[in-house]
Image (cartoon, rainbow over all chains, first blue to last red):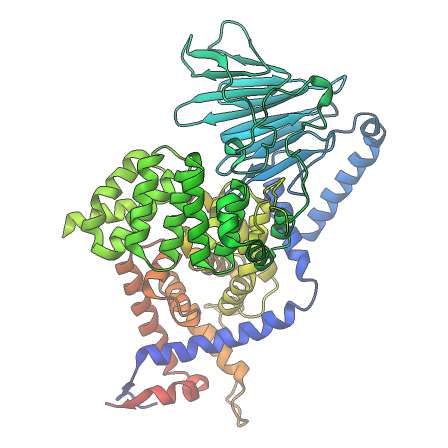
Length: 422
Length: 208
């Protein structure tokens, strides 16, 4: 090739060469995916679940399998007598060490004896160990609503920071604020015992009582639970705000009837099932049949939230907005969460000023919410997009002050650097 | 008239419908379902990237695993969860580069020649075989330093923007732009000396 020739478009030439490689790769990947595509997926989940590095050498895997099989056989008889409770999250089996988080909506951790831990949005629960008589769990952040089935021999413990809630058979919620190091336990049924190094003796919390405790000595208070505990808590994000709370704690013998999730049955739609099948159009159509205005005015808060999510996921931004506005209006305690979701909705549909307004509203109404970091990050992002780094400077500082190790901390630092150099 | 809809339980939305950012947060929280959703969404992209970097290779399955396990372990530290695809492609580029680097070390003692490269076979009279072009291009890329090579692949094979390349490689925008330019100049300079690549370059060349 003569040396005096030059590239008319170096980018075009580079792309032509690189696409040679890519097209070859695409063709190979397409043909390879035809055989056993799930094997590699399973392998990843195994690796992630066990947190061990993958073995490249097949015999290592075989040896590990043989060792596991030996253990399995020798321990079979013992396990038969002492089978540990198994558990699943939203129907998917999990193993010890599993971290249950509910980034969007809530999740339900269900044990094989029927005990359940409802993990509310933003909360994180880890199953440390399970045995034939119960399990040890750690509440890392947020709120969980617990129903432990009463049995003759049971041993359940939920730890949160320096606290441990010891449970036999009961229904309660625990809310752990990791930032403020405060625990709130609300007893709906039965009793629990809370121990901590900051208590001189274990504190018993009984039906209808609420314990709030900090980490300092003497920083705890047991008070009456008002308003009375809702019967239909557990999985619903709106659980504590439902308009029809239980009037009195139920009698002990009526465990099953008043278990979390039990709700006065009434015929009609089953939106959670439709959600499970990702039938968001179905939810919206049912709401339309019922009457959107009527639903916005009278549907349960949980249904409004489902409708808003279904509308959002099926691309009906206007309906999502109306549902969230109705939720804000009807359920004041859900207003801040709805404001955050409205901000996200507006950001995703390219309305930065509206999104900013809702992020601000959320931060004003619930400055310490589980969405606070996301809201500040969203505000910072939008300000940078619309006005550059200088406009986002103050928010970036605020973000770093509150969440120095947050996922957007590096972005915030970049904004500060950018705005300082201009 | 139908009765009010009810919600005994609120069930998490299927992970496959979550946004990238939501998935990253869920994976950071140890959610294996979310990891599955990330896998389903991006395994083909990651595999293609590794395949592009290495060509047909028996290590590809392992490297795809390495890329996703790397993501799983570092999800909580992801600076921009919305740039998940760029991030995964960046990991894919890095695990491929690491594989090439360590492989060179592992097999150095097996080399037949001082440089490790076998002499070219005599030129054939037959029409150009695309496999020759691919082989030639991979040999060229092997002579490009690691960072510019990764930047070149991400920018031109995956069509990422310079900003996305920066995110993928965890470097500044300016450094990414420099790496892209360096990679492109090096590859194009070497490629114009390679007859097997001439047909692909011709449309982009003109007389000075």
